Image (cartoon, rainbow, N blue to C red; front, side, top):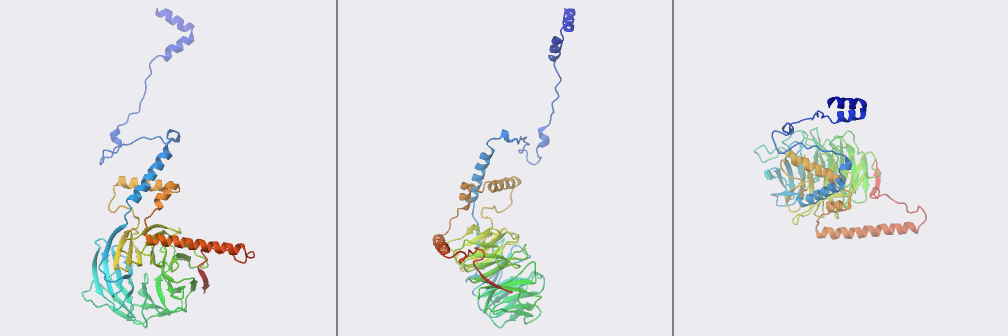
Length: 466
């Protein structure tokens, strides 16, 4: 039998190949232990092998869109920006300053002449004193000496305070010729600037100003040092002007005149030449001091005069407070606010500040309260687990990827605002549309180029003097 089979194989090579293929083969398999890929601290996270081939995931975009939609809805659901109110003042809070070296310390001044230093983490007053016989118009902190605080008021005095001393008397008192409206300290030198009938530069060791600047304005109501180019400072006057000064020169650098009065000025802490001005025409204008014939950006949204503004330490965001009793947060390169904060009891907002870590926003209003808000309304306060942080980062990426879709845009932009603000917005919109329509009709029925088109960023500028 065996001989016949061998003879058959020799004669028929096809049968020989078939017989060889039917013989069993030895299969080698890679073997891995799953416990080698699990963290020791958490045994519930297992390594999952995924194939990212798009052809295997036809519904990937649909799933991501649903997740992005849910993330936006949850963001609006958990948007509770109000943290707390720091009560203690019996009159309106008209000025406020954050400490440049201490994260949780701010100082505020009220209309009855009282000064208070607050601890933000505990929301309590650590020091208070009746420092002036009138309204406290300006306060600031010393970046060089961390325990010194400066205040000025309508009683024509500038006082330096040290809360660590047991005495209630100021360390030093400077007497001016007229009332003071604002004060700001140099970043590194022992000098500070005040505004009133003129801009005065003071040395801490001298009783009279070492330099004074004036340029046509009856009253200068705001002054602010540049934090990068520390020798440059800006001021705002009642003649609708924004004036730039250089400590190394005896005369001002330039003067920009707008259509309406500027109430406050703030320098970008990351871009040395850029500053933003809060104006009476409900807008804020960002300028480059090297070329001020056109605004870099116009921040719109308020329905009343903007009284104060402040940059975040990152230079990416701006907080504004206005006479319409609302607080708005803008991206520095966008024209409309990303969020609006308000409460039923909050009155006119006279001063606003970003915290030194960009996490919180402070507002001082006419009702005597300093309010603490989250800069990101839906952000969780407190420590977050690694997996929670990863989930939140994934949700942010999804929202950014699908932010232009109509449903996500509608939900993310929706805000509940007071009825008075809403009706004022509608009225303002009708007025602007009517004005625009009138200009178009005049341009249509006039000679060609007799009524030139003027860009929105140039409309408010009247002239520049150097």
